[in-house]
Image 1 (cartoon, one colour):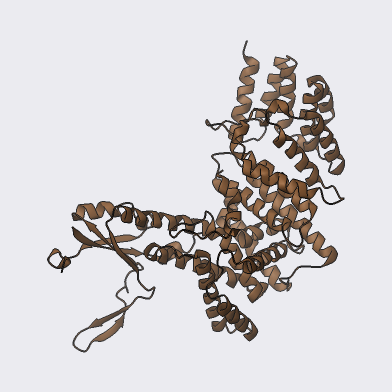
Image 2 (cartoon, rainbow over the protein chains, first blue to last red):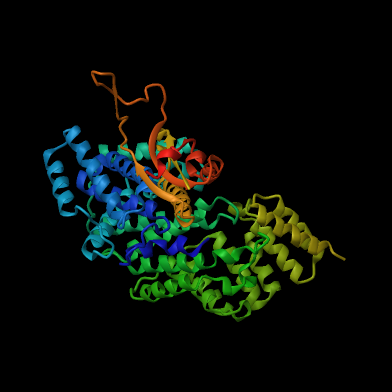
Length: 435
Length: 118
C-alpha cells in the first residue's frame, strides 16, 4: 500500500497551498465525508440523504468542469460551495423549515469561498462535524454491521459498491443495510450532537469497535487482492486519529491508533516481490514504513497517560516491541510473552492463546510450546482455523518430527485459507517431504 | 499548423454511479490528458459548455427551440481546440482521451485552413 494511502488525510490538514492541477490522493473521498457531515449538521440527520445527494452532485460537477477549466486553486472550497449551493436550492424547493434555509444561506455567505487550506477555525469545525457524524453512525440503536457500513459511507466517502467489495458482500445487501440504517435514524429522531456522560463513553467504545473491525478487515486482505480493502486500513487509521485527537479522545483511543499504525507500517513487507507471504520475523525491516512507526510511538506514549489498561494497550505494546527490534533476532520475546499473559487475562480467547504458543516456542523452545498447545487441540472454535495445525506442524518440524509435521500441514491445507497462505503451507509440506 | 476542434460528447448518466474515489480517478485521467496536450504545446483552448441543452434558432422569424439533442442522450459537454498537422495526427492525440474510456464520443473538425490564421 502506498504510504499516502494511510497518512494521506494528514496532508489535507496541513496548510500547504496546492499547486494548480494537482490533487491530494483521496481528496474527493475524504472531503465527501466532511461535506456530508457538515451539511448533516446544518440540515439535521433526518436529511442525511439530501446531504449525500448534493455532495455527489458537487463531485460530478467537478468531474464535468475541471477537465476544461483546470483544477481550481482551492478544490475543497469549490466542492463545499457547490454542494452548499445545491443544498440551498433543494431546501428552497422542498420548502423544508425556514430556519434551515436561513442557516444554510447564512453559512453560505459567511464561507463563500471556504474552506481555505489552513483556516484553522473552519478545519476545527469540520473535524467536529466528522466526529459527531462518526458517533451518530455508532448509535446503539443500529446493529453493528450497519454502524460499520454507515461510517464508511458517510464519513469515509466509500460507495455501497466499494463497501460490498471490501467486505466481500453483495452490493444490494449493503445498499439495503444503509437505507434501513438511515430510516432508523430518521424514525428514532437521532440528533447530531455528542451524547453526555456514560452514553458518550459507551458510544466511543462502539466507535472503537467499528474502527478496529474496519482495520482488521483491510489488514486481512492479501496483496493482489482488491486495493479497496487495504484502503480500509487507511480509513480506520484516519477515523482512529480523529477520535484520539478530539475533545473526547481517551488513552484507549491512542492505544488503538498506535496498534493500527504499527501494524499498517508492516503492510508492504508482508509479501515479497513474488507475492509470497513473509513471516514477521523474516520481513525486510527496511521496508517498514518509518512514518507510520513514528506515528505509532507518538500515540503509544500518549496512551500511557491514563490509569486504565485496555486490551488495545497491551496489543499496542506487543506491536511496539516488534517495531523496536531492528532485526527479527533482536526481538524481546520475554517481554512479548509477559504481554501475552496480560492480554489473556484482559480478554481471553483461543486465538490469543495460539499466538502465545508461538511466543512460548521463542522463549522456551518447541517442546514447551507443544505442551502449551495441547489444551487447544480440542478447542471447538479453532476447528476450522488453519493456523492451529500449521503452528503444530512448524513446532514438530523444529523437533525433527517430519512425518508428524507433514500430517499437520496437510490438515492445515484442508481448512479455509487464502491463496498466498496455501502456497506457504505447500512450501512447508515440501520441506517436510524432502529427503 | 492546422487547428482542430475536438468536441467531447458524453452521457452524464454514465457518471451518476461513480464513487468519490472513482470520480477522482476519472478526473485525474482527464487532467493528465489535458496536461499532455499542454506539454506538447498543441493545446490552444478548452471550454465547458453549460449543462442545459442550449437553444436553436431557425428561419427568418428566428424561431427559437430548446437544444438540438432530442433524439440522443449524449450531450456536448465541452471542447478542446488543438494544433495538429493532419486529421490523422489529431485523431492520434485524442486516442487516449478518457472520454472514450467512459463511453463518450469525440467529434473532430478541422478549422477551415483558409480562415484559420485570419
